Image (cartoon, rainbow, N blue to C red):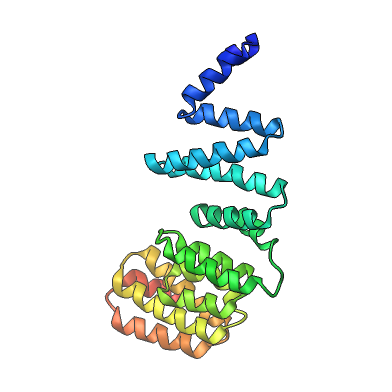
Length: 239
């Protein structure tokens, strides 16, 4: 900053070389190289930054440097580079901007295989949000049966609620079964009016899917099984 404004180029370069281990200095130098059109320097500095961040176990900086590599690949129309960096960034961050960038490099016939590989990669990350990322992929690619399979693995009020607009019109019978299962599980595991209201909400969804007989069956079952839960009996009256 100050040295550069004073025009002491040699002092600037010496300072930069000595302080490239500092992320802020590396970032500034990468930006300067990019603005000057020195894409080879951007690539070199970014790769060095990745190596350094891996040594120091700083994954946030790893992402930052890889974003620069992706930008250079896009500017150079480097398809293999775009694929490498967009895939890596998507698996690290789960940002669908990277997913769409990656998708644009494949033909319609090539893409389904890549989707399978991405799904495997997402699950392989073993992160708590992997299910949400996988669900979004399945929705974008309209893989509805796979989405139903995913929702059925560990069904909950929240997971079914998140996907009901996609699954109810396509799989009404299966959703009735899932709503029945979850309503039973909720009442077996938890008490309290908020839980009862949610269970009854699932009964109303079953009714909206046209299975009135199932609704009556569940109401009778719950009234008998939980006859001492006054708040639940009240909520069932309003279904």
